[in-house]
Amino acid sequence: MIPEKDAIELGLPYAGDTQIITGSGKDTIRLYRATVAFIERDFSILVFGRDLLEQTTVKTIVGRDILDNHKVCFDGRVKEIEVTS
Image (cartoon, rainbow, N blue to C red):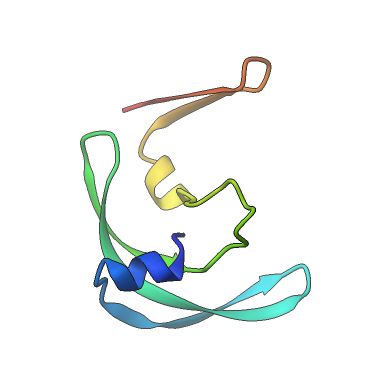
């Protein structure tokens, strides 16, 4: 997921809409085609375009479609994430 304004600025091709279920009901999100480079590997995927609140510290979310290709270790005690191929 990336901010929709960024998807538009990057010129990502629009790929349609999808409906998701949230805590407050159904929502429609626009999809964009993108190639994402993550740890020296390229992934051709569909990304959600969703503008988040300005005060949100998270600007991008990496999904399981990418993370499932790596070993990911979350160490909450020291607030570190280690990702390896």
